[in-house]
Length: 291
Image 1 (cartoon, rainbow, N blue to C red):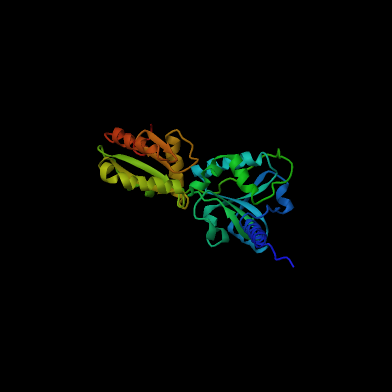
Image 2: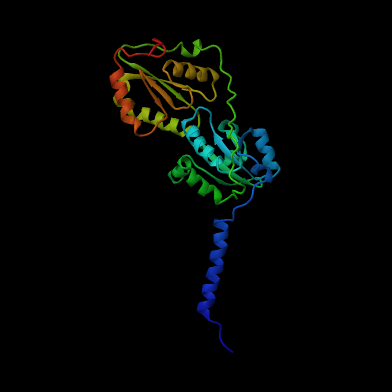
């Protein structure tokens, strides 16, 4: 009797093991519920509805964002372009609604995008990961990433893409929040509007902390968190309007007559130059009102 070919047996076993690992690491794309292939649109999602979808073990897609966030708005444009090609419904959930949910356990930064299969999060984007940068910026990269998990079936859609509107109600009394402000002829007031959980906002705040020792004598930093404070949100809108800007996103920074929307390393020198050039007898959006 012939002895089995040991070499062939080892190769065969290795191929089986590789196939199993490939299936585990790169599962086949699955199909969402049929109702999510009918239109190219966004649907509002809150914590109650999310928990119900999880309990019902539905398969769906979620865009996690925050109103008035630069990065959220930029990623939203990528998703708009994606929905122009595919008849898919995507839920839109505000980051503040994620607390104490299954998404809150997986996602720490916004904007993000989650793929949920039968009530389980199987994939998500990380706004703080360099590996996901291109996915956030390029519709083709996003499509390539999502198609690993979800079947993008259905004919290209021509439906209008719609976005839910913010429901934040502004507060009426602003005077108390502004009463602490002071004008100094030798220091420029910096007005920094930010949102809790916004990675770009955290980066800019860290930048201000880094330059404080060298530049702190030239400015006073006044910060306003706008996600969870309706009065601060109204101040943001009023100040942005005075400066001739739309209050669409944070971080938003006013330094004398200069404004900065968003934050990146390329802004660092511009912000420092603005502080130096504006600090003497500076224009102030609160005390002068007209730029």
